[in-house]
Amino acid sequence: MVSGERRHAEALRDEAAAALAPLGLRLAEEKTRVVHIDEGFDFLSFTIRRMCKRGTQKRYVYTMPSRKAIQAIRDKVSAKTYRSTLHHSPEALIQGVNRALAGWANYFRHGVSKAVFSKIDSHAWGRIMRWLRRKYKGHAGLGMPELRRRFCVPGTWTFAVNGVRFTGASVVPVTRYRYRGSNIPTPWTPQPD
Image (cartoon, rainbow, N blue to C red; front, side, top):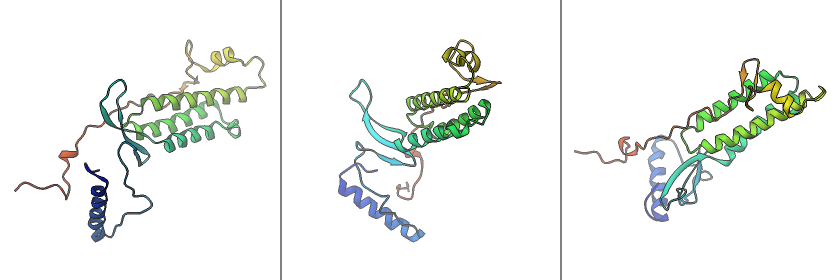
């Protein structure tokens, strides 16, 4: 990242390419581009973008899960709750979904992810609910009240079967990272004499 104009960023890209060449590395042209921070860019499944903080005029750089990463976990949950998995037990299904969501959420916990985690949990909850209704379709009276009585913690809409409880991605705490950029030495940082 540079504080300057586009030409400064392109010059820095050339410098980075020159620094990588002695190491036998090169920048991939199809993956390297120059963009303004207000447009944002995707890096390691995170979208990094400067935006106004809600309710203020202050601008901050936000790191959040990319759309591609969000769609990937939604697809994974959908695959785990597809019709072809109806032969699994509800406990196995909930454990599998919990593991997938916890692993995904642990990777993205350092960004602005709380609202995304909630949306992913909502999607997973709906998929599990439809999976349970499909699995026990032949049983008489499996409407929403019966589904809640049989598969939820009493007084809530949290799925729990034989001690296995749906936790989702929201149980992973979001921990914002601290800025350490000026403390990390780099070959380009001038060293004091």
